[in-house]
Length: 136
Image 1 (spheres, helix red, strand yellow):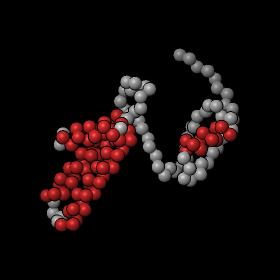
Image 2: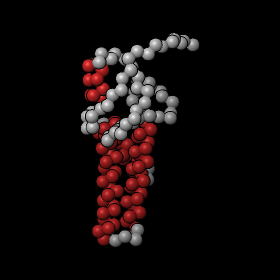
Image 3: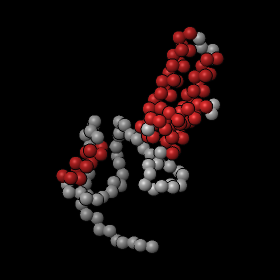
Image 4: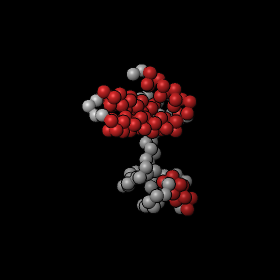
């Protein structure tokens, strides 16, 4: 075991402006205040857009991004939306209500496909999409 006593240095409280990119603002803050290293013990924040990534699985490659749990979640959501659309074909609704319901499900699948493209690239996203739908 290794251990060392740490002596805390400077402490900052920072408020980031609404609509600004967090990482850009943090980088600027560190440059202006000559912060070379540090940690953020907690946030008291509201974010308008957040992308969190994590896993409960053992990490095989510690240098690789951890997207497996996000991909699994997206596959599940694609499956649920597709199954809902298929139920919409045989449900009690008729006419434009049925069409709107199915259209909304397909649009949501498109949104999930775009997210997959962002994570793994266009070709891999299309492969994952096809594999997911073929399994139904």
